[in-house]
Image (cartoon, rainbow, N blue to C red):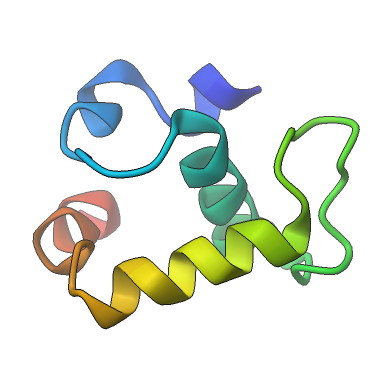
Length: 72
């Protein structure tokens, strides 16, 4: 599931963090699940960890450019 949610082309845009956390963030953003509802069986980070990393990346504007590419 991780490779489907975060293909190599998208993964290459990110330099910080790991692929599993990014996949969890994409899953929550596209599924309608909350951080607490995220299925930990499919993802190695917990919802709390994914949310914390999302907040950190947002605060340092890591996602500013790639965010637009993901939406496009």
